[in-house]
Length: 383
Image (cartoon, rainbow, N blue to C red; front, side):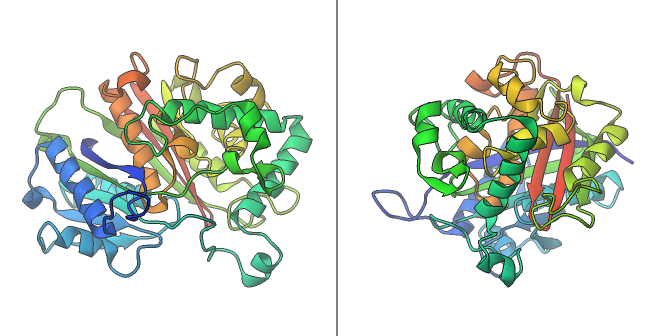
């Protein structure tokens, strides 16, 4: 297999493009096209250089990737729509990575774009009987959170600390929803309204509009060889029996979660371990998800995450900086674009281009993304 590099990235600030309250209105296709153009400019490539494309959107409707690309000119290349819930765009990058590593193409594009209205998103993952009983996204997180708190002794204050940490990181990220926004305190999080006990409003990610694009290529196609970032390994897994649509345990655990399966594979494939990482991305659509996902990925022992959060272990400047761009809590969550936004932050960190969020000397990074179905993707990037 050939070594695959990330040549260029493009991100449209996560926010609202609905034309209300003085905000600009932009079509979903415009957002996708802008992210692609930014990635081409970064890579110093032309539209004609792209040989294959994978586009993602959960809620955009029919043919969104093709419509985004048509704004730049119809290239006649294979364009495949990927929908894997929150992992959608990252699944596209994984497929482009496999295409290039196996020699099918030399240059591939992956992008994701989304426009989501405020409020609770339509849940099409769970069967109707589950939805009628209240087992929507917040409800499912609430059940798993309650289980985790009871089994480990972690508290609601620990969940609030994660939300505070990620908002703090987002405030210094120009592409984040909460850029230059107000800091929040543990008390403010705990006093925000209840959504599904013990999940409160400020423990939940904000829905947002936005787009992200990544160009991957064989190393000989890079226009510049300086500070090259390559994909060391990629892994994708779905959950076995015994787990619900979000990959959370629905009864006494007898099988590994999709995250655990993907992480076992990524460490074996890459030859690295959690202790080798300089900066990481952990998925968490609700702040509490960080607690168990960090453990399932191997960065903490079972029940240890809360203690490490209290000690500042995952903060910028800590021993294992996580979600330096604000994560889902601070960057926000336009589902189709979220997976690649995680990759882009790690790429910028490894290139030394993360500005005030920069982790000094970062050379190797880990990404974990989780989506309904359930499925989990992991990548290791290195410079």
